[in-house]
Length: 265
View 1 (cartoon, rainbow, N blue to C red):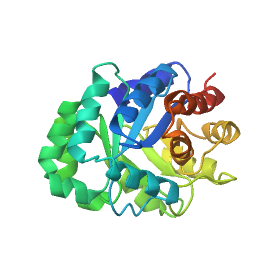
View 2: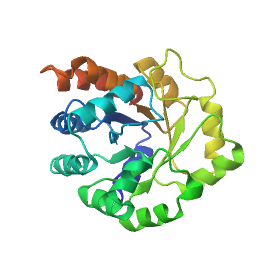
View 3: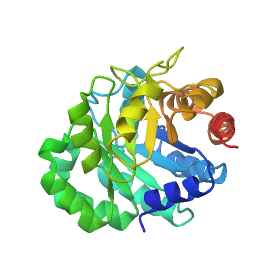
View 4: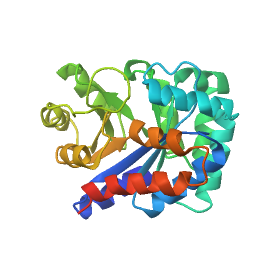
């Protein structure tokens, strides 16, 4: 069974909430990415989202844009990200999703990337700028490869389109809890429960909520209305603060652990 599906099944059985972390691959270098992945697994992170650095990350706010830039500067490429996933797999079975832009898939070769990603140990792809209306071939290739197709739903998504999106997704649905790009927020949206309810009306898939969660209190609040939460920019910010120091992995892990503990019973 796919590791993402298996993990969410176990969480449901244990009446636990899921915790998903996003970091930029190669920020500050790929060895740090490998070490962080293993540390996150040890402290109870359920799914790791690895951003594949791209020169024009349209869905990302400044914090994650800078992480992508640092990843590119460290020489990170899609093949090197897949090699890093293979290295993580030698020591960890943490479910891994690649957060990637379509241009990179197109350049690499669509079918080849999906095949290579599956062989490396990737469990799902979140292609930011590939809508489900244009994804029939992609979804078929992903099914054959045994990987999950992760789709986004936004606060502005109309009800009829929510139904279309969630029926095409697998693994979990990623609800973007506010309009705009990624980034830390002082306050989480007050419409999360309403929107996760709308999504659940059309699917049995777990709903993961992200965009803006940056402290334990926000993590607890959002987790009450979702099966999982996603924290990205706040973790990437910690990497930016400690990236050149020897304390990078312990400091970032300590921060993530405070968020994990906030939502786990």
